[in-house]
Length: 233
Image 1 (spheres, one colour):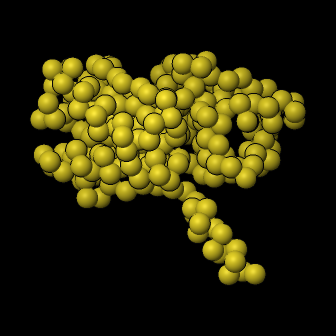
Image 2 (cartoon, rainbow, N blue to C red; image 1 turned 180 degrees about the vertical axis):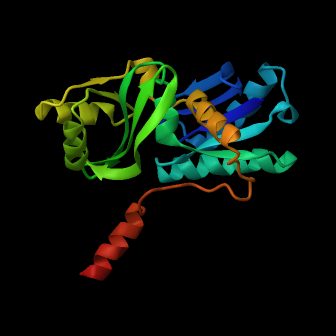
């Protein structure tokens, strides 16, 4: 089955077409341009250059969160628009799980992390072995201190992925926690990872309609937090 995958959860944007696990084509851009300007043109060009139409695609997949609130909304809206035209089923994929699939060929504990500001990261943890993942912790927003304590108690070296990898690496090193960062070309989110995460949903029968597709933020926006702080005072 062909999957059209979209990733816009952070500063980079990418779109990919896969045939099951195999990458057919991918477009990646990390130039600082807004995703509202890049995603749909990238998807249209990718399909055209691959000799495909939307009718050839079986599933539309998108990184639904956690991540940048604006980026997630743009990605989900793009996926909805593509799905709506031909009533395609959708996969709302965890950004963190999608990153972990990029290193599932390794053996060890994977620690995807995205900078969530205020000394917090969006994080989940996985055990990788022979191309499979076992989830060790849910997607969550967690402080660096809490995460460091958790992984220190695990006693295992952490392989760090994501735009928060360096932040966590520096913090872990200060605490004597064994860790290493994924290589640069595998560290950031990619649409291939989203497509691979979508494959698990296809096999598990948990796809959604375009109407059901929604971002998963995992915490309140800054504006909402500031409003609650003012109300508390």
